[in-house]
Amino acid sequence: MSTDTPNLTWWKTGVIYQIYPRSFRDSNGDGIGDLQGITDQLDYFQWLGIRAIWISPIFRSPMADFGYDVSDYTDIDPMFGTMADFDRLLNEAHRRDLKVILDFVPNHTSDLHPWFVESKSSKTSAKRDWYIWQDGKPDGSPPNNWKSVFGGDAWEWDAHTHQYYYHGFLKEQPDLNWRNREVQEAMYDVMRFWLDKGVDGFRVDVIWHLIKDDQLRDNPPNPDYSETQPTYDQLLPVYSTDQPEVHDIVAQMRKVTDAYDERVIIGEVYLPIQQLMTYYGAQNDGAHMPFNFLLVKLPWQAQEIAAAIDQYEGALPDGGWPNWVLGNHDNTRIASRIGEPQARVAALLLLTLRGTPTLYYGDEIGMRDVPISAEQMRDPQGINMPDKDLSRDPCRTPMQWSNKPYAGFSETAPWLPVDKKYARVNVETQRNDPYSMLSLYHKLIRLRNSEPALNQGSYTPLLANDQLIAYRRDSPHGDSFLVVLNLTSRPCRYRQTEQPLLTGEVVAATSPELEGATIEENIYLAGDEGIVVRLA
Image (tube, rainbow, N blue to C red):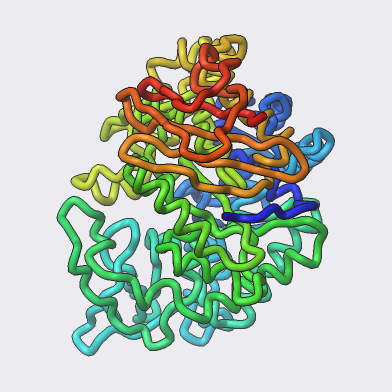
């Protein structure tokens, strides 16, 4: 059973909303979302009850990986606007008491970044050691067997200097050498540039990739690899990722951030729970929140999810704050993974568990993955491995604002196609429909924001079986709640075994018809139903 933590900061009690800027709102009619488009929708976040927006990369970039290949860390890409547009967005957000989190990409730069251009110019370049250069083997083959996440070898031959450079992702994204102190200081200065502007924190991209084995040893084969998996999974990346020294880097990032008031570092870490926990730091001096992707990766099965929640809660270090994610720009949308009826149940789970929830744009209206033809595909991960069906384009399609052409996202054809259901699945249509997904999210977020039991209270598991999950949220500063969720499409019963029996009224549910009911010893739920009960 977890305990209450009083006087929590905004990033612990609030809801974070991820914006993929290319797809959020186009203000200038070029078919691509921009900063002014985000500024135009700040009142929407305020209405929804969002505390902070996290914006995927907006820095200057050749867009080989849509902003995750940065050519200037302290400038805005013209595709999204100007620095003046960003300053306006930041000021308008803060005026509404909204926090702004930027996506920091420290593992690699663009190959067009001046640092890499200089590094590549000669073996004696002052910045040669800013990247990972290595001679080939005697037969001319790459230095080791490391794979790129986006397919193929992770080493690219440079004919000019007759060495290979390492790229964990695209060849246009050379990895920085984070063992070099000058690289470290240059990147900490980038952080300070944005923190001085008033940015409220960073989501740090692939933070577990930052340090590589200093001997560049071969990665071992993955005994569980199957042909349906990406080629990257052929090997276990035990030497190319998650090295012990990475925690010193994360601690320094935390030190930079902690020099400013109430700022946050959120680390992107796809690792098993015990390894994930190390990113909080040995003295709770690492990332404030290493992202927890359990609800993204686990099968949607009640007992498995309940066990994972308990394992996660039990593994948290002293002072470590939990967080939960249902989707992001790299994964299939929740409505496509488990279906729209269960996506409602998932909303209850996300917004009533202990810890900070992060919501992916469009999930609040039930957006689903959109089929993208080979001709329309833009994602390099999909293009580079066409036989693997790994494109992330389907979960990155334009936000559906209204039933106007192109879903109110733009006045012209957007960079990716809009879902054909947009006329019914959009913010404008759902906003005043009490039965809509958006109304459910609005109600749940408002309830969570107003109740200490939900935004900071303890979590106590009660029951999990092959259909349902039941748990309590309690706070000495407010009411207590019972949450019962049916993760199947079949009816189920929750029979109370506690004495005295819990009593109370349903205050939020997957459907408004369930609200207002008083619970009894036996709680019966239809398929795809979930309830939040305010206990008497």
